Length: 399
Ligand SMILES: Nc1ncnc2c1ncn2[C@@H]1O[C@H](COP(=O)(O)OP(=O)(O)OP(=O)(O)O)[C@@H](O)[C@H]1O
Ligand SMILES: [Mg+2]
Image 1 (spheres, rainbow, N blue to C red):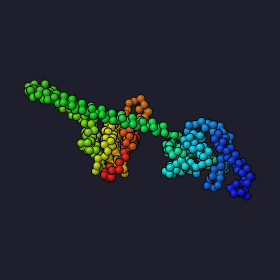
Image 2 (cartoon, helix red, strand yellow; image 1 turned 120 degrees about the vertical axis):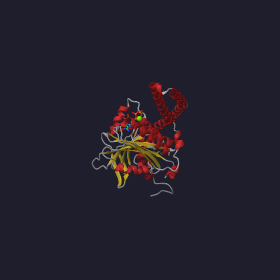
Image 3 (cartoon, rainbow, N blue to C red; image 1 turned 60 degrees about the vertical axis):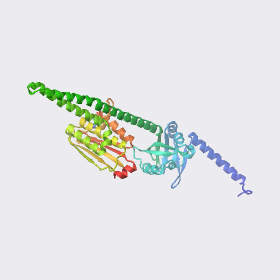
Image 4 (spheres, rainbow, N blue to C red; image 1 turned 30 degrees about the horizontal axis):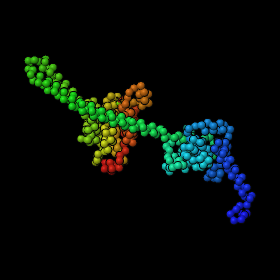
């Protein structure tokens, strides 16, 4: 029964007061972690979840974690969440508990999470996601999901640990920027050494070669042994000058500007084959336009390092170099049929050694948003695959 317009009868008000007091008590209990039972709206009406026995002890532990910890139904309803999670998503805990986990996820992350919640596998699953917080900010996280044992008639639930990756991402970015700087300094230093070699050492070698030739011309056939020695010296000096020129050329990325990527990859491979006697088969897709300078330089340096490794470690009989353009990426594959190696073994060995080749290749690829994959098996060979993204104009024109 209603009272005079707009007012409720006294007994209705008293009833509302009692319900308000009960709701406030529940909120207080949620805030202080004193809740034993949670009712969640499920597909088939309200579902009751209870926290029993040992759960109380675990809850103390879970409340002291920095990570977010949750218990969810397979329909993504939050049965339990700790304070850390509420702080991460910037929602009051009482709004998190009993609500849906979907509200923090993008459409893509929801779709990725769905099968994992339904079938997380015995040992659980991990995915990276971005959570949307209450103030509209976004948080990069890792979600670790584990199935929880179904107890009696309780519906199946999953446990989730949410790790905030903001700090890790920041450190990663810093490291990447630093590595890029190292690569830039290395390139500048290579350019300087190349110029020194070209301007000074090559000049000196040419002068010595000239004097040597004069000596050969002055010595007559009667000076037999001395003449042979001078001729040998001339030959060695010629070889040294050619070798210095080769080193200087390899140090300078300028050849890329003059010749283009395709020609430089072929020349580098041909030079390797000539020097080592290991044949290299090169296939390159025709590239109608130049790729970004950074991309070309990375591919050139990665090929140089990969071939250097083949020469140094592989004992290969054949090498193939392949440049392709799958989708909006460019891909370089260097494959040998040598002795191969076991990366885990190599990682263990690397700790005490200064090996930078593979690390440098990986970093060059990662800085450009690409990835480097190594496939290697003992006595089968090694395949280095680098895939770099291309900007849209390069993608269209290079197709
Ligand atoms: N093509 C390959 N065949 C067989 N083993 C290889 C090959 N490439 C690399 N490796 C193995 O991986 C290791 C690491 O290679 P990485 O280029 O990082 O270092 P490195 O060549 O030994 O030294 P650095 O490149 O710093 O001079 C090598 O020591 C070698 O054991
Ligand atoms: Mg190396």
